[in-house]
Length: 84
Image 1 (tube, one colour):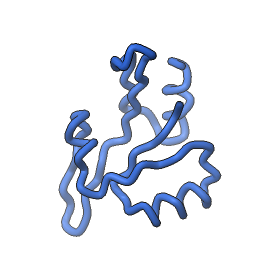
Image 2 (cartoon, rainbow, N blue to C red):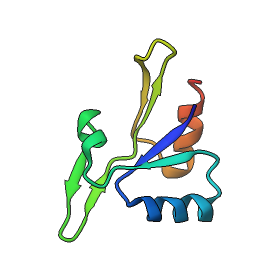
Image 3 (cartoon, rainbow, N blue to C red):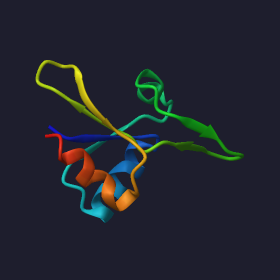
C-alpha cells in the first residue's frame, strides 16, 4: 500500500491528487503530527512551513525498512519504489 502525507488540508490534497494524477491517497497532516512523529524536518518560514520530502518504506512486519531522503522531486518516487 502506498500513501502520501501532506501538511495541506484534505481539500487541497484532493485537488492536488486530481491535478497531478497521483495513483495513491494523500493523508492530510496540517498540524504536522505525523511529520514530527517520524522526524521529518520542518522549516518555519514567514507565512508557511516547508516540510522535507521523505519516504518511508514500511515492511510487512510494520518496521521501517528504508528511508528515502535528499532526492530531486522528479526522482523521489522512483527511488522509493525501488524498495517495494
